[in-house]
Picture 1 (cartoon, rainbow, N blue to C red):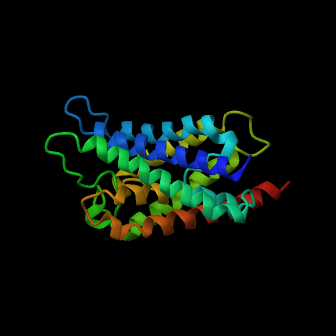
Picture 2: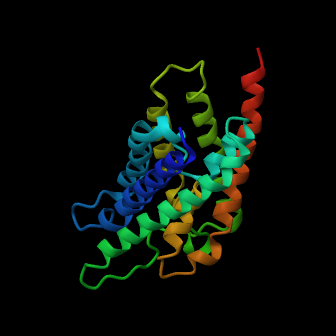
Length: 230
């Protein structure tokens, strides 16, 4: 598969993740009487990854997330030369998804962007959790997300079920951490939402690059031990 097609798949996959996941939070979560709540948002994020993993996973590997790319790289399952192009495609795709969402949401009378499904700590955390709590949450949960990805896509795992495990894993991660950080585990998703938020989210987005990437790289290193042990 050519690099161009891989990058296109990552672009559209991340576009769908942001539009579908953040869109569920911005457009549907708080809708009077019919709101899906944070449980619905958690499932929406999981479903975006599950659906696009089946749609384009055979093209690009279905990363849709710079942290996933770093984690697979650290596990020796992704080439260094493709790392930066993948990340650029993911950020651009996610940003376009956030832009389309903003255009839709701004058509409502009295629209205010507010947090726009962005991530944060302190006053920008849904539960007002501090930086340390958010840092630990994002590192540990991204670690577990990559562990699920690496395990379910291993050649020894049952074939064809990886997108289900990964999608449900991301759903569980959101169920745990929406109150803490509004759940990132994905720097592209965090950057895209922060660009359109009417808060100081952009000034905190550094944490949602550092923590997920650290957690992902650690997972890749640990998985190497499982992959090579008898």
